[in-house]
Length: 235
Length: 291
Ligand SMILES: Nc1ncnc2c1ncn2[C@@H]1O[C@H](COP(=O)(O)OP(=O)(O)OP(=O)(O)O)[C@@H](O)[C@H]1O
Ligand SMILES: [Mg+2]
Image 1 (cartoon, rainbow over the protein chains, first blue to last red):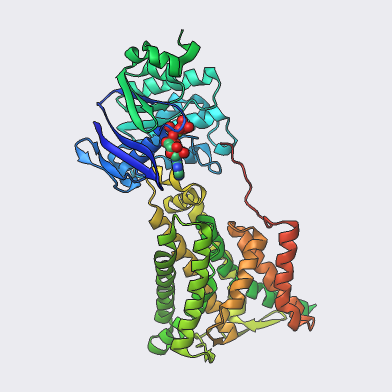
Image 2 (cartoon, chains in turn red, orange):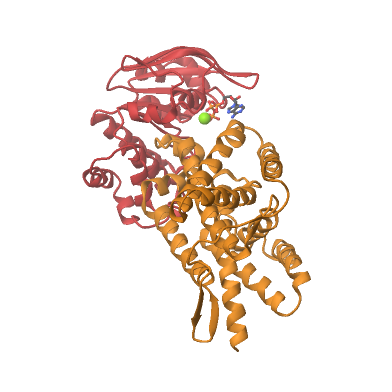
């Protein structure tokens, strides 16, 4: 479905992503794990065309989408829930949800109902300004907003960041649920343990290079991974 | 009492024209965090556009041509001078804006000479009306009404339409807006178009009263309207409107009290006071970030 080949991304003179290749198949949950500064966010931002790659190619559903404008990426069916959520704080919850469907011209009522079923708490907060939501609620809103574009591929950048363990569990449950409705997932996480548990496959990114890959199950049992990313929480 | 009302009316009318221009500053600041120093000069160019349009076309077509030409000028300036600097430091864009301002003033001097040219009289606008004890030309009466209607319309547009939603999104968060599928450049161009359109309407109301246009006609009103936008809280449309009215009324009162030499300085005294005591202005952006 998504095929990345030899992708390189620079910021000024600094190489943040140094030629990575990976692919995602329809219906999978794929996770990208790695330490701070490994280039995970950069990879997602490049797929979304917020950043232009120095070289390499991105292919989605058979089309070369490298470097096309960001709004066309959304139109093609890729959505990104960015790191730090980036909801619109001075819009209401409902407006945030509606703006997720910015490129659609059809009736939204059904889909709004659907995301409210997925996140009942948001329905209660319908008219509240999004900036006044709790961190967990903001993350749910970011996911709900992303869903409104009817994505084929949903990318999530550290959805568990700064959230209490119980809320993290909720978010991961929702991600698997979304996946079951047919949306392919690319998940970037610091919380490697949780991510590997729900992932079909995983890639490990280290300072701009992919150093390991395998199924979620393989990696969660891998000695090196346990040592570097899972620590004690593995057991 | 009657003279107070009379001066009040003049002040409100001047304030209305200021408000229309101040909205342009506030809109552009809201979306680009840029003080568009060229805005006053766009307003001045609109004055010249009218002189030439009026000489060649019936007044109603001339008005439409002026509006269109001013919008094109505003959008073209954005495309040529600001959009290539989208990722540059904000100071560079600011300097580019100052450059455009000088360019327009010099262009006008070159094309039309520095001598004031007389502004045409649009039929009916200068007609004297007497309402109760108030005597004023039609333009004085309609300016505040036009201002209120247009700014209310703009607020409705921003809050209730798709393009308005994209303006709010872009002014808040470039990247998140793009992730929604919003086209950055289209939204920014639209913002400049709206700001220029209001400046063009403001110029018709303002110059009809002043009857003269010269290459620096935009400098002082431009500065005053910028102050009006800061006073109201830059980024806020109701703020710009109220700021415009405060400046217009304050200035007129000073002139009425025989302090006309001091009336321009009033603006800047106000600016200093507001920056010292309430830098965010009357309706300054409330910050509710929680990221
Ligand atoms: N806008 C930028 N300008 C310059 N350098 C940047 C920029 N964004 C990221 N970088 C650099 O690129 C490298 C990769 O950053 P990136 O944000 O992709 O890492 P990450 O894997 O997402 O890290 P984290 O887990 O902390 O979010 C880092 O060294 C970072 O300093
Ligand atoms: Mg990151």
